[in-house]
Image (cartoon, rainbow, N blue to C red; front, side, top):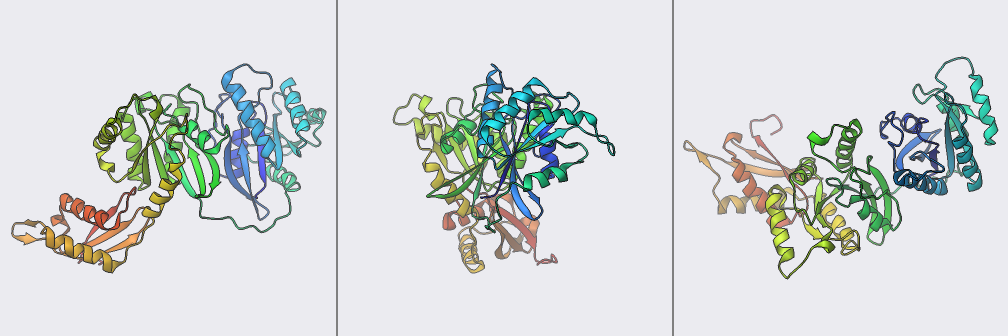
Amino acid sequence: MKPLVAIVGRPNVGKSMLFNKLCGQRLSIVEDTPGVTRDRLYAQCEWRNRTFDIVDTGGIEPGTDDQILSFMREQAEIAISTATVIVFVCDVKTGMTASDQEVANMLLRSGKPVVLAVNKADQVGRENPDVYEFYNLGLGDPIAVSAVHGHGTGDLLDACFEYFPPDDEEEEDDDTIKVAIIGKPNVGKSSLVNRILGQERVIVSNVAGTTRDAVDSVFENEKGKFLFIDTAGMRKKSRVDDRIEKFSVLRATMAIERSDVCLILIDAQEGVTEQDTKVAGLAHEAGKACIIVVNKWDAIEKDGKTMDKMRKDVMRDLSYMTYAPIIFISALTGQRVDRLFDLITYVNNQSAMRITTGMLNSVLADATARVQPPTDKGRRLKIYYMTQIGIKPPHFVCFCNDARLFHFSYQRYLENQIRATFGLEGTPIRLTIRQKEDKEG
């Protein structure tokens, strides 16, 4: 197992800024609003030829009644319990507070090694005397850092490194399937992750918009290894006036980009909304293997035809995604959730399928014999051959005499013939048309 460094502290001391500086990319949303980071957020770092994981947590408010803040405290406590070493971040500008002392006592009780980072020491050169008061926390030598400029971060990582277990040269498996869970707010994305993981991994609250960042959770069972990325619910653009919400949509789009499979969650009570078609469109355009997951199925009054009717409605409203399988689940009761793993593995394999040029061209010959290629002003489209040039999604190139004659409807026909022969269920197909005179041809 890789070492895990947890960054904790009270709200607004600069934990997320420090997290972003250490992992070298802007993963965590940084705003001057306390409480922006609500869940645990993971990233991979490298220092002195060791890779390790780093986790950013919501600020710990020791004695709070606020529902979301107490959730955040629980999330931070879970991170502390699983961490190899804890980085406790304080703010030199506000000085040592009673909350800092309470958090420090909580960390001391955990028995974990703690490295004390005093942030916002932004001046270069001279030592800030205010750093010394943090010795009173009883956590050893404070390390002055500036998350904005990066001063002191090397010393901080060196201090963490001392607590890492010996490197056992373990190679990481790369057979993990990355699954992005996407959908509009309040459709049950976090509840589904929690149901799968069997622990309160993501804050669930029926306040829409609780999840703001994309959050990663690794899960392994007999079906394989999965990395679930729970994303902030995507709202309509007109509603995205809050800057943090804008970041969340961007983050969800990034989550789609780095996933292998997208689970598009739809609320069974509402059916497919305009927003759902936009969310699904993002995954389709990105060429990701997709599964349409109709959630909250337990809340629907059913007769013998309810599922068929819903399936038809979904197919009609997401007509550009007829390749995606549909599954009806309840994240609340767990109904059919276990079937998701087989389906995820199946569509992931379909999107990685390679088809030999010989097999493709026999399908092409059969298809063109059945339905003649189109003509225009006496000139007929001639398709010379087809070959596959990529996977995830399967990408085919067709060489022909004139690309202008290759009508969209004929492309759709060929795509359907390929699907009828090879399956390719759950994955979009890319088809590029090239004229034989092209240099690549």
